[in-house]
Image 1 (spheres, rainbow, N blue to C red):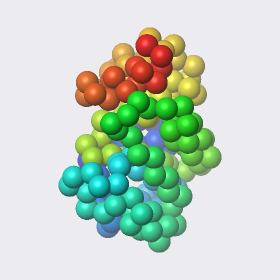
Image 2 (image 1 turned 60 degrees about the vertical axis):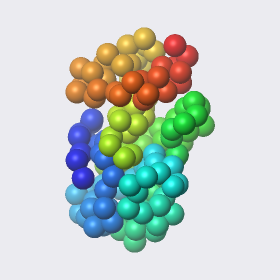
Image 3 (image 1 turned 120 degrees about the horizontal axis):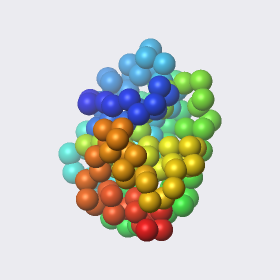
Image 4 (image 1 turned 180 degrees about the horizontal axis):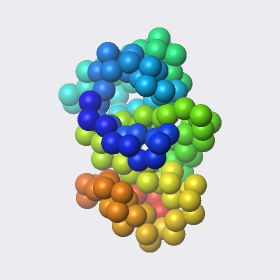
Amino acid sequence: MNRKTVRPNLEIADQPTSEEILGLKAEGFTAVVNLRRPGEPDQPMDPAAEAEVARQAGLDYLSVPVGGEPLGAPQISSVCDLIDRHPDGKVLIHCKQGGRAAGLALLHLARVEGWPAGEVVERGRALGLELPPPVRALIEHALGR
């Protein structure tokens, strides 16, 4: 799994294996957010199986399928709320390659740090988070741009 630290308590990644999820607790992680949709190609385990692995590891788990349709406020809120519930542990947000995870991490930072909607993509770029065009479009739609 390729990971990137966004903040000390927040990392994004591509698809982890079950072994990698099982090892997260020892690294101080307390929660995993999976942004992949059930049935996506190249998915080693569906969200339900991943949820079970995360629970076996003692991690809070949230599945929020993102992609194909506009990103809605309930999806954004559920991810942000989970991150907010884990201030003393680390949260891993993942998708297939990390693009959607970067987008949701940026939306969380924008909410917590009060970033203006027009600056989210640029501030993400300054953090080394490049958004693929489809993810950038999802984020801009979610921000009302």
